[in-house]
Image (tube, rainbow, N blue to C red; front, side, top):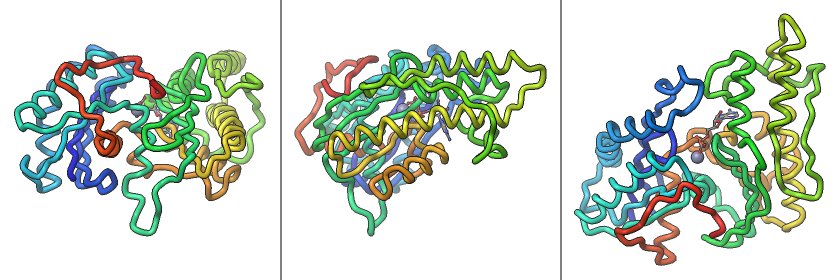
Length: 332
Ligand code: KG4
Ligand code: ZN
């Protein structure tokens, strides 16, 4: 069963074809990063307009790369939330039109759930699918959530951020340090010379007894450090910031893994591409920790196809009056 999927929830226009929820046949991502860089972040109206321009060529490219025609596509999946409402509408309307005109089942996918499903993709013939109960840390530009997945489609939310998302914190910190957008990769590179050393320590919001996060105090502390010196040491500050974020993510996730007796732990979303986070997570959880391929951490449609395939197995077919939901809850 080949699922064609569409992703337009934020600033990447994506289309992909995935076979049986695991085998990547094509994965096209038209990134808008260059377009938004001059603003230091995503501008929703600019994102929607760009999705309209790129969506059809991106879908055509995905079919072309997979060497498939429409007759070999079994379903159309699309991210219907959470995300930017205008951006989501472009993908959802394209998916509806395609499903209707080709007579294919339409599947509405939760974007956060899809980030988790990136772990089912291309694990390789030797690797096995993630095992339940699965503890999931989803860390992206828009989201920071700790969720237990008991089975396909069965989620329980343990906690999340009270203010900035982890990726958003990286992006804001990069701005403070004069580094480019997106901030995560820029901070990772800037921190490299200080890895394993560094003499600056930034505060962590513990929020004891909860699985919640707060990153806004850390951002303020960083700003204070930068303003306190005439020539701030960007490498040390980037390192200190990254350590603080990684440390709190690893500690909370490890504690949640113990609490829930998780068989495995997966990290997903754009920040899961962070090397330091991967290293520290492996140090804490050993082989129980699993991550998607780096290229599948940030937004893409392949993960929407994987989640869509398993939703279809459960009979979750949407009707043509399906709407976008900018605040769609994973546990709903
Ligand atoms: O999942 P994603 O593409 O978009 C959302 O769904 O939000 O995540 C984008 C976020 C950005 O905030 C970016 O700074 C962050 O992921 N990111 C990273 C790294 N690569 C991307 N953060 C830390 N380290 C990285 N290597
Ligand atoms: Zn995302």
